[in-house]
Image (cartoon, rainbow, N blue to C red; front, side, top):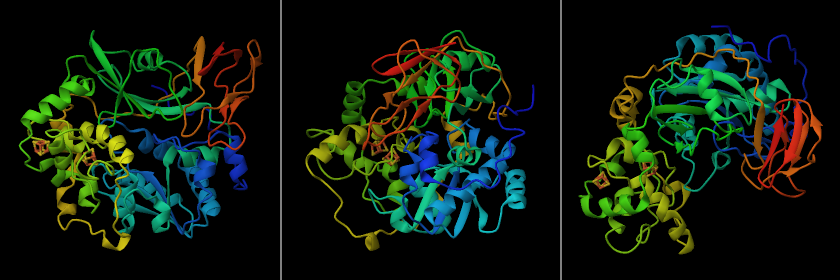
Length: 447
Ligand code: SF4
Ligand code: SF4
């Protein structure tokens, strides 16, 4: 295997001036999954910037690999981001098990940036949990890191700022039942099928694909789904694997079994990371509501669920699905105007919170993932796709609007779509050279 150098080596970016306009121009969004436009996020002022390197989805290694190979642009981007948000201090939150990476970051970090070592547990990468582990502060229910004087950004997002070039490629880990679990840099818009092939292809004839990890996954409809700016991982599993079946379970089945089998043991609530943080979320109460009328009918118990899936995938001894009950209940609770009425001062983390963290090792065993390689070395692979499909909405906010027309020729990095004036969104750039066709939801570039 080759060493990873694609697109980064040999570029000196020292002396860049941090600018929100430049971040907007480059189309940088939260690369950790949220896709919130970074230029808007960094309008916030905060005295502490936390780099979220707590990657906790089993089998995914993208952020750790980026820190290992590209500490320089990452730290440059972090310094620029700190200037933009007015942060006096920067903290890289990373799992304590990555001793070599911690040592390397500590050796290279400029004054004002330090490392916080985090336990190897799930869900360490949730912003609320991360902020609490790093600072001891609790973001109030429905709040944002700025409410406790923090800003949080993903490793790849900060690296993209430091690289100072349009976001045309995405780093992601391909894991599970593939010949070579690996982290790759891929052109945005390429199909997940092509990326799986680059990892040596599936090792089983019938398989399913989970996008973004296994806990907060979205099952892929087919292999033609394009990679977007927020695709952080592709996990291939045998079609009969329990995780594939669970992620594809229909709501009627979940509700029916939940109604009849939940014994209100409260394990789902007692393990819920947000409940342990002191938030008003109680998945067992949401389950109880199934027996009456509609999920979410009884309390605000569903509204502040972060959908980490720990209750469903780890805590419930009956293999029920409290997470999806919470998800179904959210719009009902919102419609009824249910909301938390407490004050931030009233939020108290559970005294046992620290002792109820779920170690990654146990989670991987419980999920039946022990047979898969839990590594994803960053490896160079030359992709030459015949075409890419770039969705106009691959970020939070409104879809971007094409600024090219059918038949136009574009080069990698050219602007092809931008948000409408006054609307939240992000610019999109060509990820390959080629000829454009513009559809209602996506721009296709044929090489
Ligand atoms: S852990 Fe399972 S059985 Fe127990 S209350 Fe929650 S959903 Fe019901
Ligand atoms: S998915 Fe379950 S464990 Fe996670 S926050 Fe929601 S209720 Fe709590």
